[in-house]
Length: 180
Image (tube, rainbow, N blue to C red):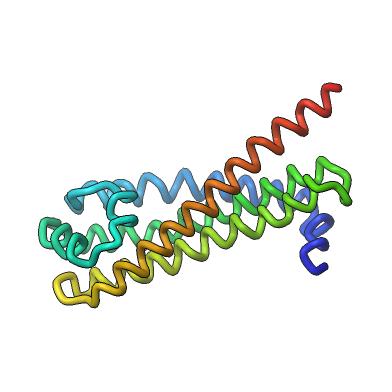
């Protein structure tokens, strides 16, 4: 299986560098994204808008937003956040999986989780494309774009929850086994 190559590649040193870069990316992207989101005056939080499944609600929120340009800039900085958490999920899952024997279920599942983490970031990027399409025409975009946007967000959240839960459980399990 092609994914099994991820047990050995990239090298552990490179994964650690990716992990550090991901953390630096968080430190840079989150404050910038949040700053522009706050000054935009968008009336609801990210999660509410992402999971609205309603073009009309988005249109109403856009019409109530004093600064859609800043809102768009926040979405652009979100791409930096996506790269950061994609790298974090990928490198962390592989680093944890390598604490187990290559043939173990934990090692194999870690490789799959690394791909799920990347998939979450890709879904988020597609979701943001939909957001930028709606903001480009905030009163007349097709409602289907909002529905696609919300489904992409839902699947992104599912991927991230799976990756986070796996990392916590696998990390704790590895720590316990090490102590035995």
